[in-house]
Image 1 (cartoon, rainbow, N blue to C red):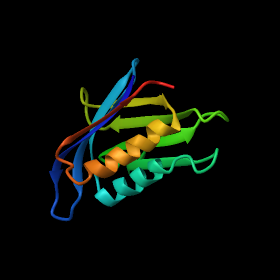
Image 2 (cartoon, rainbow, N blue to C red):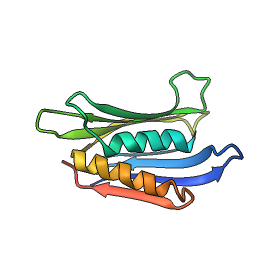
Image 3 (cartoon, one colour):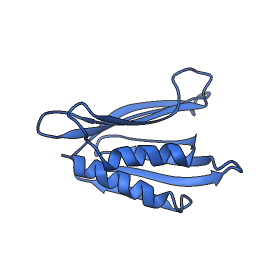
Amino acid sequence: MSRVDLKGIWRDDDGMLQLDVGASNERTSARMELYAYPADLLTFASGLENFPASPKDEVVWESGGPDPKWFGHMRLRAHVLNGTGHSALEVLMEVRGAEPNRATSAFSLRCNPADINELGRRIKVWLAEPASQLVVEWRDA
């Protein structure tokens, strides 16, 4: 079973959200706090809803970046694995800071396009009330 969950912690005056983001499968899990604008999440969710547009399609949501100047780095990337449509949601989470807080996780959640489409639909609904917790689960493809 794979899982993605989002929960809003705080909203800034300009609309930016502080989020708790988690992802897991039966072997591993990762969780981190990050900052994102709802418009960026809406763009990601819309891309997921229409995934895949082609066999080489990918949809990415990224917060922060690999440069150490950033608070952290998170990337979720939906992509097609093979010609039969099996897909994956690649998860990269890098929490920066001093020991014991520093952590890096990189793994993938196997899925079908319908799972990714559902994640996109559910994120769009959740954005109306981001203080609630969104949990989306599916069986690995």
